[in-house]
Length: 152
Length: 152
Image (cartoon, rainbow over all chains, first blue to last red):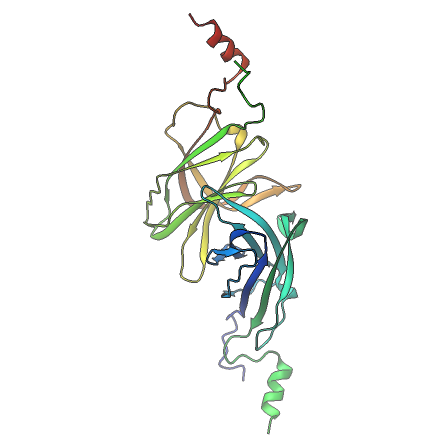
């Protein structure tokens, strides 16, 4: 079953952003994975719901997803908070979960050139659903693959 | 002459972004000062000219301006490069200068939680003009103030 699988095809990371508790703002969120970034539309209100899905591809499981929420202004956008989600904490799944409320902090914590977390709570939070999907047709593990083969 | 001046009014930092040598891209740039960000429109071509001016207010001269240039994509935006401009390197002036070509690097260098520079050249560069202006009516220094008073 492995024969048709490109060994270098990375798994796909799928993320859904639902909203943020952020007071009366016009807010948008960005998701950054290394040098790649996706941005939501800007939504008004204190419980904005973007309901936008984003997809990333990566093999670098030692990295993480940087979530930022910004208040859109006329002259400047103001950072409402950020959170860091290590890719190793994100599960493989064939379907969307319920997501998780992440508290947003003011600053990224960087150690030796690597992001390791965030600090200084802002009081804002964001509901994020993130899971990995395997490339099409790729078994999740040799065991699952074996199970498929053994299925009646 | 100081009587009408708010002691806490910060100086105004003015920046003009002219363009980037970045190959065939649709690019936009962001300027970040601490938790505040301004973004240009997206411009096509290998020598985009945004010709947009941005303004920031700050008293934190120990910080710096983070310039980022992004290639706009359908699914993701890709970072073309970044540069860090310490505010202490930016001059006070009453008029715009010719700007300076800044080489864009791949990564920010962070030391002890503070950005101290960038590394890994990308081959791209950006022309940025940045100068400080004093708040309206505020003398540049006690000496200049004295000169004004002593003027015939």
